Image 1 (cartoon, rainbow, N blue to C red):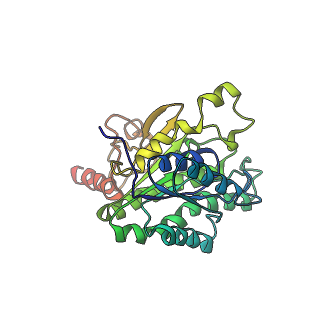
Image 2: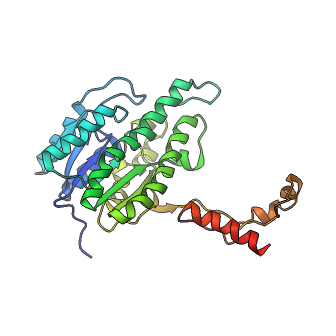
Image 3: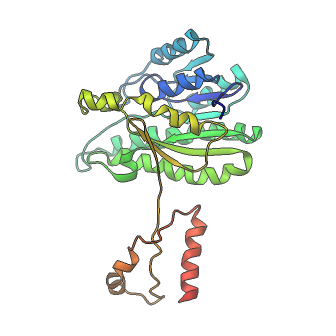
Length: 300
């Protein structure tokens, strides 16, 4: 099969001044994409800022003959996000790929977490995905082509102590994907999620060097590049780390019909049948799940 190429394609990668985003931007550029490298340049907790990191990645791309521009907008800032998309359209006149990668951490147990820290993490990870996607959406619809990759985390899918804010935001982007892929399908827009396991600034001091060496961020990038390609699937959660790739799914058991007069005690008594994983299904939309309940009621 032919190599995946991106000649003529234009990509925006947020949070691309280092770590995962940097490798995503570099590889897309190596394969021919013109890339806007977005990075606020702040600390892991979101404080501070500057565009030096984004400019450094642009210089890396230009050094091997690629085409790139830098942007220092915050993904939480409405005007900054619009400026980011305007920069792309001014430079290249189209936008084919959005990789929403920007993120911060404000870890603390829920009992000790300030609401402000919860809100900021939601703003960066969830709304910082929504805002660029919204700004790019009509452009992609008009082209009848687009690829959007959002970034979740094992914390969002499965939980992690001290990261209630991060987990809530990261599962939120999966919910966003689930609807955008339905709305974008007829316009040639495919929306997928990457769930990386990687050693980045966010894991410094947590992972010992031998483990960090196994989890280099560049080991995730091949999955992202595939999700950005013309051959991309749609509505998939692709997990990736250490050179391994897998698909995560939200599944539902067949369950049990208890009737309209069901009581809490009946739910307790039938719990083994309700929770039986045999025949569990990953639904393609909320309507499919609702249909299951209607059919169960009709069967009685």
